Length: 100
Image 1: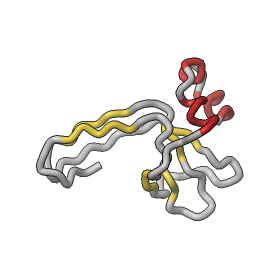
Image 2 (image 1 turned 60 degrees about the horizontal axis):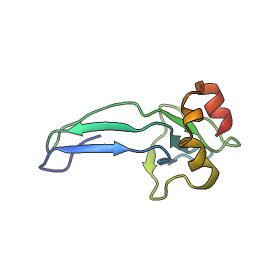
Image 3 (image 1 turned 180 degrees about the horizontal axis):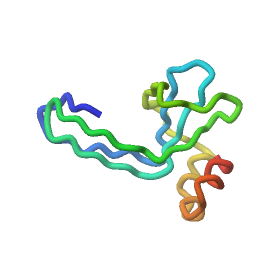
């Protein structure tokens, strides 16, 4: 992430945020846990991982070469309920992915 602001920024990415793939035939991703990053000023850069899972099981798994944009619409319905469940947060990655 690179800042285009003259002010320090705290960026919060909430569970349920959808990253839409820009690659044909590749799954979108949904954020599973809240993540934060701080950008100090214009031009500052921070790189971090976001705990996410694939959401379109009939499509291919993304690779490090795929790019994503943040959807203007977060997860809704059953997926949003699942991501906000305390029991979901306590499960292993594999169980979380299968549940999604």
